[in-house]
Image 1: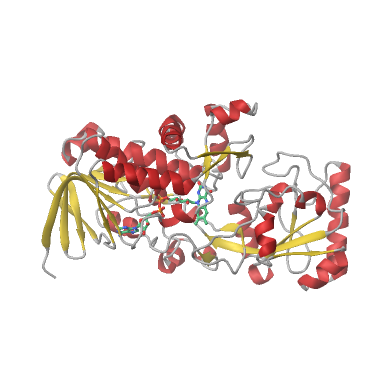
Image 2 (image 1 turned 120 degrees about the vertical axis):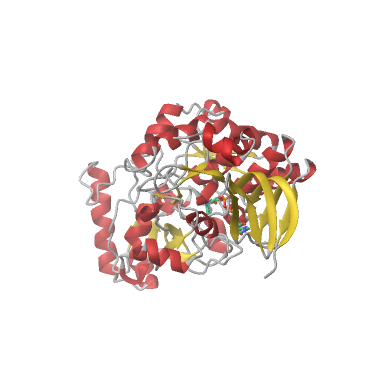
Length: 465
Ligand SMILES: Cc1cc2nc3c(=O)[nH]c(=O)nc-3n(C[C@H](O)[C@H](O)[C@H](O)COP(=O)(O)OP(=O)(O)OC[C@H]3O[C@@H](n4cnc5c(N)ncnc54)[C@H](O)[C@@H]3O)c2cc1C
């Protein structure tokens, strides 16, 4: 195919999810000529499907509700959740860069009042943000400041000269970005090939996430020798109904409100307060790769209509949350032997009453936090859920300024990565809300780093090592 030169910019951003629009908005409002390429007809990616939870510490919302959080506690919770595998310098950059996220949410007037403890947290740190309003505000800001957005155009390869990355080739066009390229192509949750290559034990998870998220950014950067981080730890998220569609996401974590998880034999198999990524792996090992969230009227009353992960009303409307007046009736409806479920619940209730000795070490609702309650008040409820590959939290190896590193640790001049395409932040597991926070914060950091380098070579020199 003949290459056409179809434009010259200061910077190219590849991908129109949160990281991409954040980078494009930042570059454009600072006077840089920027083009954003999105392979799908509309921007959004996984960001548009997401629950909208952001992990942030030291916020006004936390202060209002008397939540005692700090940057150091955020950092140590992420370290703990990642099992010691996460890159400390990236965690520090994420925590230090939170102000970028708070400012953007503030400007978009996208806060809600919802704040909760979720996977990987020891205090209430998950802030629910109106994600569509935030993404749309950043996109509008980018366009208003002169960014050119090209929809339906996939970047195929990076263009390099002696100084480094200077643009992309997309559909036979060469689009130049003299200061470099920001890869914001999301993860590879829609690439069966890459999932089977890196995490074959997860390949049975239900594919989910943005339909365009097929690992393009990884492949483009590999051709230039980019390294990887956390890739073998990628795991699916437990809690999604098997009938969830590509357009409308459905996920419940009633276990963080007090439900137990049982398999098709009516047996528990894990500490239900663990990260839903840990539970995702555990459920893949259960018969039929399904687990039922089983709970009683006390937990049902904790539903939060309209709040992702906790909205039971909507699941009832969809007919996916079932109920019964007794445990045997509930079990019969699920195809579980009633005596098994009764025995499991009796054992659990005994452990809750005694305060310790739970067979799977559960000590709290989520991550060890929150008082457990017995499953005893009718009616009883069950939600059948599977493991879905919603996001792939391993990716390209990057420096704290978002510059992409080769496998030997040296920098690829002019190449930056932000959002789910970048690895190193999560290690072995994942704290709720850190993917969106990472996308927004590092979209801005990548833009600033690229802008600070007059040319790709200058960027490599300035940030060497
Ligand atoms: C159902 C669901 C719920 C979630 N909930 C949360 C949550 O509450 N909190 C949280 O922190 N995280 C959550 N996540 C994860 C989070 O949404 C993502 O990690 C985050 O949105 C990634 O942002 P991004 O900008 O990196 O990528 P995306 O938003 O996925 O955007 C990447 C874009 O790049 C485009 N693209 C790909 N390849 C190319 C190419 N070659 N050329 C041009 N464009 C390309 C894609 O089409 C896509 O539009 C959730 C994910 C899912 C699926």
